[in-house]
Length: 324
Image 1 (cartoon, helix red, strand yellow):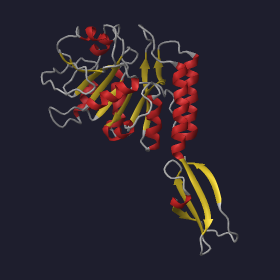
Image 2 (cartoon, helix red, strand yellow):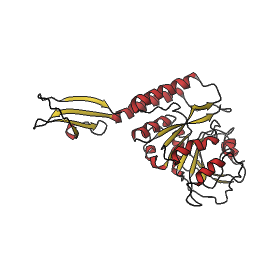
Image 3 (tube, rainbow, N blue to C red):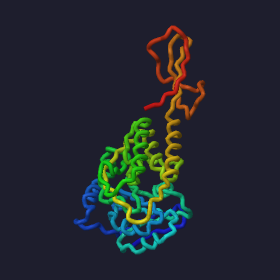
Image 4 (cartoon, helix red, strand yellow):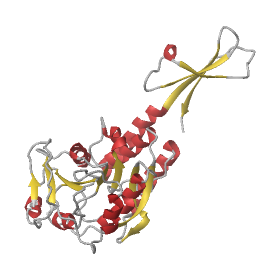
């Protein structure tokens, strides 16, 4: 076993050339065969799997042992200042498993753990999974295939398109349904399982992770909004989701709800345009538009297009328009 451990937020990357390829009977052979088509060299990392971890001593060992083990796949565990025996459990893992571990000095939250993992990721495609055992690694091919095939830039695992093996709390479904409708109405995206942490994305969209404002669990929704605004292709993929057998969720629903309301308001403002229609000195009507967030002053508005029909009466009209 090779483990890189650090008390710093930033850690150096080290490769292990002795990782053994799994045998032909592995449940990940289809994944390996698919990824082989994109390999460009022995040291080329195709897939980075990020696992944010906070007090998961009952599950982390089994989760890591269930992941694919191949020389073009890296596994990054971000220890968000766990106070239990999570790190000791990792030390028990069999020798041929390679890990990179980065430890936060203080507990920073789910989103910050993902961002730290991204900083250390070298793969062409980056995957995030939970460390509580609810996600099935055998769904990895379902998640990454659309990205490698250029069908999507960002995939989100969905229990509603797939299967879940537990009683879903009513509050969870209602909350996701509410976010789903807001996404659909204001951003034109329908994402049913919008809080799921099983996601994949290519390196080309990493700018959506810059200047993140929500480092807790609202981080998941923020990234959907940012990807939507930037015009990236988002796809929900069917996955299997299992019940959490140990511990409890770290999500505080009241805090999450407040943060989601806040971020929707913030990102809706970014989509608002101020539109002014006025007649120029030559009698031709012009439409001026500018994003309100960037420049609310009318003198800085730029001409986007002309009106073909000219009204004989001069007028100035101001209105607020939300772009689809």
